[in-house]
Image (cartoon, rainbow, N blue to C red; front, side):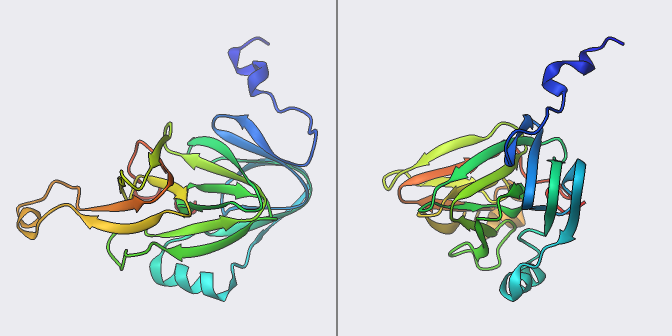
Amino acid sequence: MRSDLFKSEYQAQAPTAPGMSLQHSKAIKYVVNGECHARQGAMVAFRGNLQFEVKSQGVGNFLKRAVTGEGLALMAVRGQGEVWFAHYAQNCFLIDLEQQDMLTINGRNVLCFDPTLSYEIKMVSGAGMTGGGLFNCLFSGQGRIGLVCDGAPIIIPVTSQAPVYVDTDAVVGWSSGLNTSINRSQSLKSMLRGGSGEVYQLVLQGEGFVIVQPSEAQPGVGEKK
């Protein structure tokens, strides 16, 4: 049998070391030897002796998710084997955090992560209850995160002299040392006339970077399947 479908780049390879790696640009493979964490519904295939369980996020994070609808519904994958994660054929990326690092990520863009990392839902400073995507996930510790992005990401440097304004539905994440606030770019009069569709932006100031996807979140994308 002959087909481009059977190219080597599409073949699942034998596991080497425990942990996550890119299967290709749309999927992440995790060799589990103990436990890993992932968004609920992200598993597309597995082999080996693995169990999938809803992961408790603690009372504080649970209440934040219940009130805001934001955050990340998690599952724990336990045992020995291999599991493949993907989400709506979005692009996948790996980020390695060192012990001193902290990174803020929108919950809808988290695919999987090592259990050595700590995770907390944080409210964006100055956000109040205006708009979506304003409660995000703060990761810290040492380990690897697998992210999804709707298209190729844009990494924009942020400096104290040049704050960056990002659509709250397009932001993927940012370095945690940045200061955040919310900007309203339309007057009430403009909004009453129908508006431009660009009402609120997340403002990032300080020294660091912001990750933006070239797409505004669509209903259902990023939600648990």
